[in-house]
Length: 95
Image 1 (spheres, rainbow, N blue to C red):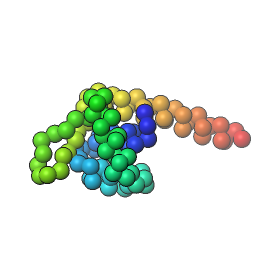
Image 2: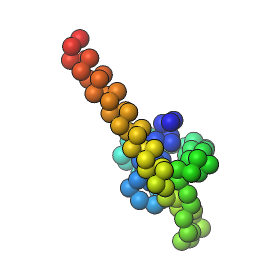
Image 3: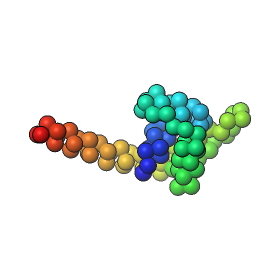
């Protein structure tokens, strides 16, 4: 999974959002500023995989929601990253 995809799924795990709201949420929780091309490219890939889907438009902005499959994928990816982080930290303590 690419970093922008992980960030988008993590943002949507906190609730439905449109693109700009995702960019701001990601900037706040990860300190990363995704450009529109990167963000909407990730959204398109995630939607193609069935990990996110659009929801009813409330105004002219299109909100998205994470699907059950997307939640499972995010959970698996975060567990894998957690294992890698813990291993890295253990190794640093030994160095």
